[in-house]
Image (tube, rainbow, N blue to C red):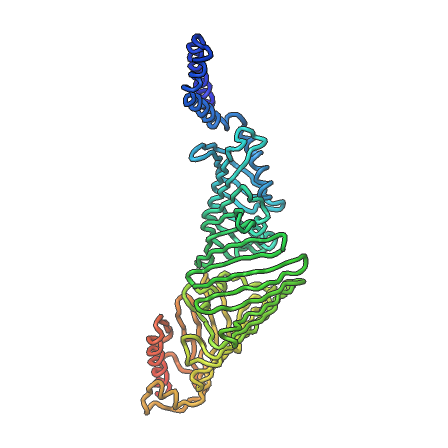
Length: 496
């Protein structure tokens, strides 16, 4: 009300000044000097008009009640975004750098629940129809520091926003988090939105969505547009740290969803074809040009959920599981797959392991069932001489750490070849055909804890070897020397 009184007093003084000026000039007014008056006072009249406009610009929030303004803004947002906003605090009007309203602690609600809690909300008002509340127009909305809660029922919230009307309107989301939750309200994983915006692209003649995000400490960008007429979706995902780019094109109708993705990773290009129909998702993942031996295929049934993936490749890359901040490792740590209703089978074979060429004929079998993950019957061969098989294995999360507990059966086909590689002294070269090791591997620490060793059925007492923990290093050559020394120590203590 103080602002309104100041503006009213200014208007009175300004009106008095204009009246005095007119009285002085009207007393001398004739046809000739009237023309001169108009010409000489164009600038003055323009300034008067601007001042009046500016005063109205400042007084807009005082013309209408805050409740009326809030109601009209919520109606406009509903028409543009089809979202129900709720304001817990009053709107605050600011006129610089351009007219806009701000409010704190607002929310987006659905019929069933609260979708998002928003710390800051800015609503920019168009100068067009600025003084007509019923015809008010918004041209830009910025949502900042929001927390979105999504689950199976509303997981496509951000995609559905592409149905909004962005012809003369832009919607931005800054510094926000998206919590993907189970139906039991447990957090499965968190996606951080650094900045995202919805807008209309006149070149593409389509609504666009662009965002810079981060998930599992992995920054990525995504760009999406949806052609409602042709019923096609085009999206691009870029993960610069992994030198990975995914270009996806898909089509859909009421019952079917199909498409393909071109996946560019460093110097390789792969194709991913997929189809979804009647709760069944099927895919093929292959490289037609550069590596015809590389192929994966799989089936996912959603109701009830079960899946199987079978893959074959020449070079098997295990870095997504074992490297720092590896995406599969971080995904497993969320325990998203530890659900009793999930049945998942994965079988992958490879000729050798990338960066570890001595390991060949690799077969990885993984099973997720009743909330447990095991890699039983996974196998590999070292230098065509030693066969490894994982038995009674289990991958689990304890106190936020990913852990593998397993028995490893080691069958030695030619012990002399092993002794030559290890440079074992001849007096210690006793015949050995089988070694059983029970171990625990901590993925984050890269630490192997040896629990038990049996050589040809004989259990080695822990007093016979002075190590329990093997701490792997980043340098593979260092690891090779380190493991050689450890194995020679085991042989020495076994022989006695």
